[in-house]
Image 1 (cartoon, one colour):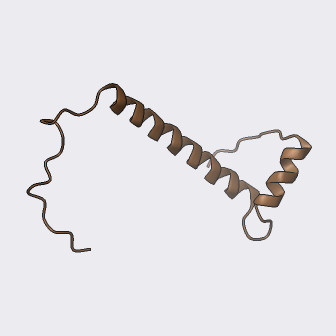
Image 2 (image 1 turned 90 degrees about the horizontal axis):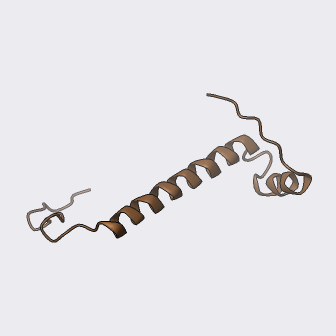
Length: 72
């Protein structure tokens, strides 16, 4: 795992300490999860935009008429 050094102003650090719940969830893990969430949201936005610009046609869309019953 690579390290990343970031600088936070005092107000942001205090807020991070409040929401990261010291003792239960370390700041590093909280920040990793926040970054993963932000990356995932950016990827979803890009995907939505790509579909908005070029939506599937009726012939390209998935045909679910022959899908089997889900037995999870």
